[in-house]
Every structure is written in C-alpha cells, then in structure tokens.
Length: 524
Figure 1: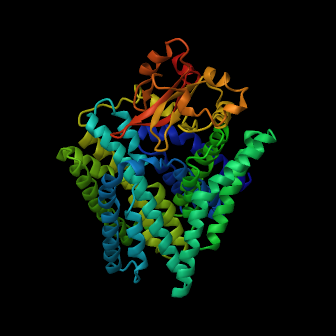
Figure 2: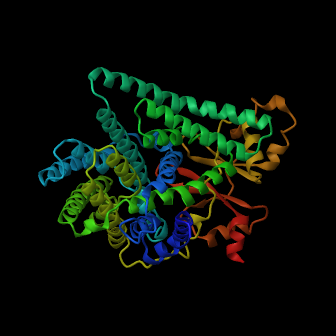
Figure 3: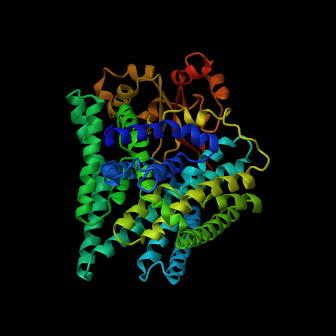
C-alpha cells in the first residue's frame, strides 16, 4: 500500500483512540499524541518514515493552535483584577522566568551549550504553564472545594493567561535579537513590531467587521466567513514574518484581537473542528516523531531532562505556593496550586520546536524538554489532586455540563445597537441571547420576542440598545454545575437555552450557552 495512505490510516486511528486512552489513563490527550508520534516515527515503528510529510500539517497546526489560544482570552479579566493580578503575575511568571535563566546556566555548566541563548530561552519557557491541563481537575471536583478556593482558581487561570502572553513576548524578543545584527536594525524592528501590534490589535477587528457586513449584504454563507478569517490569519502571519515576528506570536495576536469581534457561530465551530481535531493533533504527533528514541540510552538525555524538571518544578511550585498564600489560602491548598502550575505542554512544545529550528535549542536539550513535558503532565495533576482534593473520588459522570455548553455563542455587548442585536439573532436563532459588559461580566438575556417587535422600525437602531431589552431574572447555571441542575431549569415553561457563567470575586463571567437540544440525546 502507498506510504501516504498507510500514514493517513495510522494518523486517523490515533485520533480515534486518543480520547478513550487518555480518559482511561487519566492523562491529557496531547500526551497521547506525543507518545503516539514517538512510536510511529522514524526511530519507532517507522510508519512515518519522512517527517517532512507532516511539515505542512505542522506549520498550519501551530498557527491554528496559537490563534485558538488567543481567541479564548477574556481581556476584561485584566482590567478588573488590576493590582492583585500584578502581584500574581510577578510570582507566577517573572519569578519563574529568572529561575529558568538560572536553570539554563546550570545546563551550560553541564555542557549543553556555550551561549546565553539557551538560558534566555528557558527564561521565556518557564514564564508560563499549561493551565488547560489542570482546569479539568477543578471542574471535576468543583462541588467539593470551598468557595474561596474556587474563586482563587479563576484568578489562577487569569494569571496563566497573562503568563502565556509574557512568555510569547520574551520568546519574540529572543528570536528578534537572534536574527538582527546591528543596533540600528534592532531599533527599526522594534518600531515596526510596535506598529504591527497596534494595527493587528486595533485595526484587524475593524477590517473583519467591515468584511462581515459586506458578506451579509451579499447574503454569503458562513463558509465564506470562515475562509475570510483564515485568509486574514495567514495574511497577518506573513506580514509578521516580514518584520521578524515568529508565526506563533502573530497568530496569537490575531486571536487576541478578534476576541470581542463578531464571528458567526457556525464559522467558529468549523475553525474549532479543523484546529482541534486535525491540525493540532498533527502538531503533537510531529513533535513526538521528531524525537530520536535511541537517545533514551544516552546519559545526557536523562541528565538534561532531570535538571529541566527539577528547576522548573521548584520555581513554578514556589511561585504558585506564594501566590496562593498571598490570598490567605491554607498551606496544603496553596501547595496544591503550586504543584498544579508545573504542568507544561502546549506553548512549551510549540516554542521548543521553533527554538530548535532557529538553532537556539540544542537537539539533546529539545528531547529533554519533551520528556520533561510528558512527566509534568502526570506529576502536576496527580499531585494537585492529592493536595487539593484528598480522599475525593473521581466524579466525571456528575460534572457533565463542563463539556456540553456552546462556547461559540458570543454575548451581545451591553451597549450594542439594534442592528448588532439583529445580526446575532440571525446567526444563532435562539429564544434568548446572552448579554455581557465590556469586561465580560454577564448581565442578563434578551428575549427574541422583544427583538421581533422592534425589527420593522429602523429609526430605533440607535435609540434602542441591548441594555434597554435586558432581562436579569433569567436562570443561569455555573460551568461546574451538573446536568441534573440544568434539567431542573429546562423543566420550566419556555426555557430552551441557559447562559453558563463562571463565578469570580468581581462577578459572573459569561462562558457560553447550554442548549436543550444538545443535552436531550444524553437524557434519552
């Protein structure tokens, strides 16, 4: 059989079995992809004889991965938490960055490298952690943890988001200094990058909105909107490459700039499916395939992996512990948040591959980072569960809601005019529509019946805004609630959709919509 067909058969077989294997072993699906890549790669079973065949999958996958990370950011969180967030950021990002630099110096002393590029890169890598690997644990045991711990977990996630931005910024600076030769070029590139950041963060949403309006006048389908978003994404990444910004950073900026823009729900679903179910798995399978398994017989691999894991675990755990203690959490719970922050996977491996390609990261150290990430995905969640939820049994069956609501349904801005409301009505066709303020705090819902009564009076476009139609009494469910609790609300007459919120100290953050039609098959 053709080698390409054999690879495709194995690739989609991995996608099919990854989820049940991950749930059975209680490990992240990304870890399964990395291990599978190692097993089918050139130094494993040899199913994937030429890694170059995955190159296009990998390049697009890494762009979509960072675009998705940026798109899921809730920028309103930063404005609300202010000084508290600055303290947590210093403890969970800046302090570990210094520890990463020190760990790089130790590796240099062990003979891994002779330049400061490795310590500088490790500083950027240690500045962030993969909170997406630990959040399912908080969801699962949400009914057993005190409210104070639950609220701090939200701040913990916000800190992780800011740490991810810091890590990518430091990595971008490192890549820029690697490519330029003179101080004049550095000044020019910094100025160009500043203009690029401004145009992407503030200009791209305006361009996207104008394009969507044109498409709506032409009555183009959501497929056209999907293609336009992909075109904008790849175009911005190409422009960023011209000004020496790595595609990881540019793709993240595009996602961040579109967090508050209106994108058709079906377009969002298409992009999410393509990214999370095909291209992102290809990224992590390719990372595993790049590893040379013969290096597991090498003393250097275990030495480098051991130094990396020890350095990362110590500085990250200390930062997380200090952060939780600053919020007056008890020592045991603070230690749980400390070990929770040692998990490394998504951003770490993405930047590690880029750093290896640019000559910043030696091959042996790259393999050590991959091993460190795999180990951390076991140690972090298991240790956090033992410290935060001692004696608790797994209860995924009751916490079904966390994976059932539609995150693609964006809220209507509180001050949105009637024309904007009508566009959302056209996209979603619900009986109620969520409303949130500029800081992502949930405010209430708008009823379709109220909108319908105003449709045929265009003079009201600027006189009527979302706040005028708001119903603050509509029932809501928390993201960590059970399906049974949601069903109690759905039994009420006329309730077919429920806003899903996340509780924080500052208020309830909108997370998505739970639709009756999506949970009926599970109750049948």
